[in-house]
Picture 1: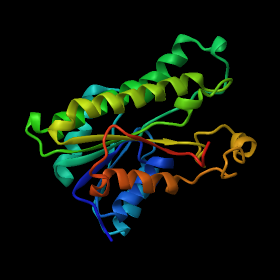
Picture 2: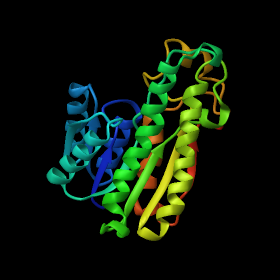
Picture 3: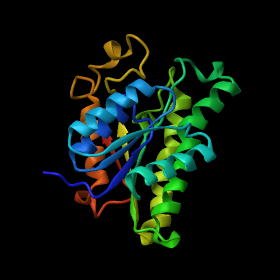
Picture 4: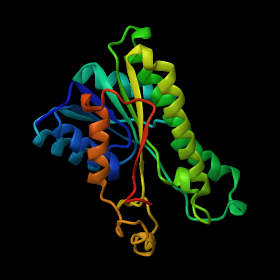
Length: 247
């Protein structure tokens, strides 16, 4: 049963959770704009897989830390597929594991720019196109956070955790700003998920620590994202859902 209602843009859609979300959304009836920064071949494979699920899809290169490229991204997806009615705010990065005392300004700038600042910029662009206050027809923004935002990631990625905590605050605050403008804002907090964001051996070391005693699959997060983007979650906004095996 398909549930999609139009065009969805997925940032960081060429791999990991973003790629899985693109496929789940295509299966749910959406036309999908797959954003990537450098991985053109991977994005093309995601587009082909989306099309095999029955919908239209395109890949668009853009660096979502740059405001002008975000505008170009939204314009390109709209021109090719139609007005965007959902945005999956997914682009993210980690740096090598380390303690806070070892971080430098360059590392912090990179992590916060990609994980937090880009999320704000993409959400702002989405609101300007979807909010009824700007002449839009409404829509949904789903911000991809991390369970690290709650747990803190001590000794490894406290900067990543803090940047994702900023995404959680964005979800709560923006949802309240635009609730009466036809835009719902939701979040998902994945836990330990089998993607290449982890350093070698990390999942082997930590994968059995959740109560469910295994790491999650990108597809398990993607199904929640697809639900949040759909009308099945129509009475939800300002909520962030943990998909973390109980961790």
